[in-house]
Image 1: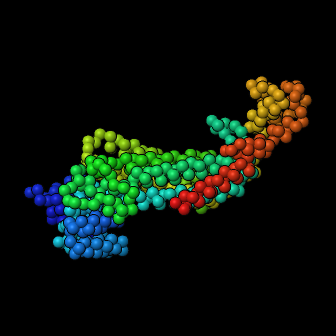
Image 2: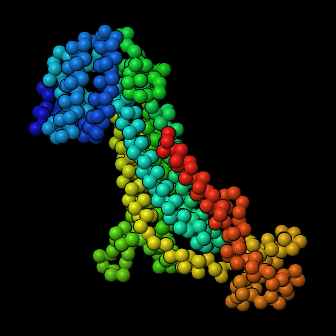
Image 3: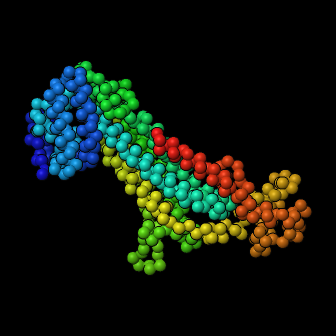
Length: 468
Ligand code: ARG
């Protein structure tokens, strides 16, 4: 059942006319801030408890307010109560609904509070929950990547710089690079949470209030770390929203880079991986096609999340203190960033989890393409040559190979020797891709046992996050 337009807004006292219907629709934010209903109720209940504790409202008022808000929450969740699309925003809607049920108590709820500190609080409470959700999804993605990596610590792969064949690595090492990124993303959200989880309630419209309120009590009720210590800042700070959007943009940027690689890897030219049929799409005209739509869409969506950061910064940069209605625009933007990330992460994890890796093909592609040239130079250095000389000799060897359609792996020893006498038979062992990878045991390197150590270390770090 829908509730009709209120005859007059809650703030109607000063006005002689009802608001123009178009202006009301233009001004209203309920279509998008309704999603904060739970947090608005939670904040109001904490506020009411504080008012009663301080003797500002009666125990009877408190009982009715808590009951009324509990009922509203319950009815909204089970669909017995619908949001009024004509309400100005979620805050007004819930207060009006409460007042309908308990007129005397409902009218007291807004004592010592303004919508300015109310909305500032609600958005913090709302984003706090979303951050936890997103962290759970990041954790899932990291675990999926680690599982794939564990099966490929010996899978030789060509590593690139400038998208040119560079040095041999393993597929596990490559995947673990992304786990490091997502781990930073996870902890970045923790940092954001610290600054976000403080209570602006009690800032009032801009200059607090004359009632003897207890701001710390409200913060504790809501499991917030502290209160905000300047009321002007309390109502007009959206740094946490920008910070969160930025953190989300970073996640999308990382997802987008991996998407780009997945798109390349499942091309016919690479064929490093094959996506599961359930996580790819066909073409409406070309029967042979299997398209990596998920990865492309994630890459595409990263653009809009990156833009959300810019929208928020631009929206805020010219605002004088304290609250300005412009700030109502923060929500759709921030919600969009949150929604996109929450759409992308789970489907991306499933895609990674179900993809098949073509070890053989990766290995073949790594071979015979001079990605062991650095190791060939290093071989000469171990035989006493200076690195620059060794580098030059190897460059000449590579040029020779290209001209004669040869590769370092099979170039005859006498030809090696014609470039430098110190070359011996052991050069073939030294430049085998497996050796190249296995010798890179330096911390952070691709050698299988080093990578396994990095995986174990990361798993410990994730375990610690799970226990926080
Ligand atoms: N819907 C408003 C918003 O999102 C709530 C705060 C309104 N405050 C005011 N002074 N008009 O920003």
